[in-house]
Length: 174
Image 1 (cartoon, helix red, strand yellow):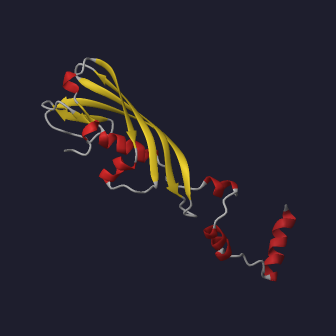
Image 2 (image 1 turned 90 degrees about the horizontal axis):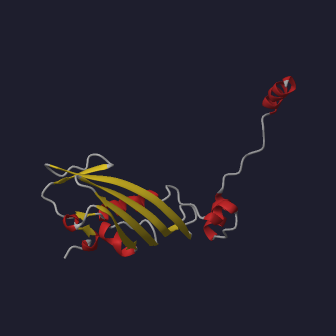
Image 3 (image 1 turned 90 degrees about the vertical axis):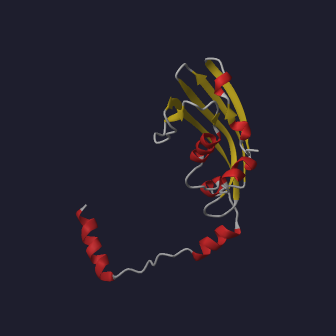
C-alpha cells in the first residue's frame, strides 16, 4: 500500500468548482522523504482545489510550528511557519513539471497526489538560518554559548605609535 495514499485526490469524480481538503502533517509524513532537519513538526495544510473544465487551480495554505535546533547553540526552539503555494494543473500528452507554477498531467490520469507539493511548501517555509529567539534577545543561558564566548578572539588594543600620529592628522582635518 502506498505510504502517501491519503494525499491522492481523485479528480475525475469531482464536480466543477472549489473543493477543500485538510491535511495534518507531523514527523511521520517527513519520514517518507527521509527529511529530518528538525525535531518535530505540527502543521496543518488547507488545500483549495478549484476544478475547471480544462485545468485545476490549487492553493496550499500552510500553518504550524516546527521545533528546530539552533544553528549556533544547538538548543531546541519552536518556530511558527506560514506559507502559501499556488499551482496550476493542466492536461497534455505526457507528464511535465519543468515549470514551477504549472504542472502538466497526462490526459489518461484520473487522480493527483499532492504530497510532494505539501512537502515542498513546508520546507520552503523553513528559515534558512535557525537562531534561537533567546540568543537574539540575550536571555538564552547555555554551556555552548559560554564556551563560544570563552573562545572568542579578543581584539588587541595595542597600536603602533607611528599610525596613531597619522590617524591624528586625519581626525584633525575634520
